Image (cartoon, rainbow, N blue to C red; front, side, top):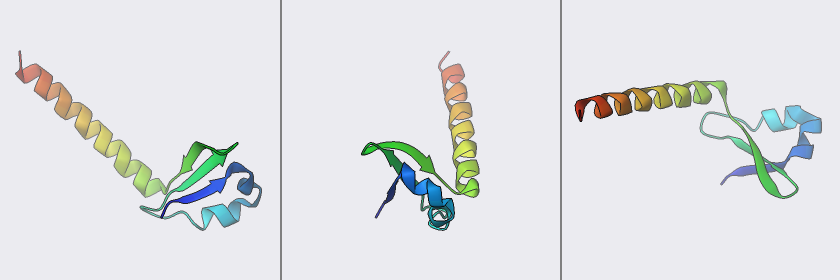
Length: 66
């Protein structure tokens, strides 16, 4: 179940931060709409590595089609 909180809960940011874990982001809303996501730093780094790998694979695929 997604962990969704209003951005105003950041006034008590310690309560928000304790709910964040790997694979368990906190989604923040503003005026009832999704605005921000807070994720664990290890998860962020894994996402960045995955994006880099996918970009490199895409480049290789484009070059092999030529």
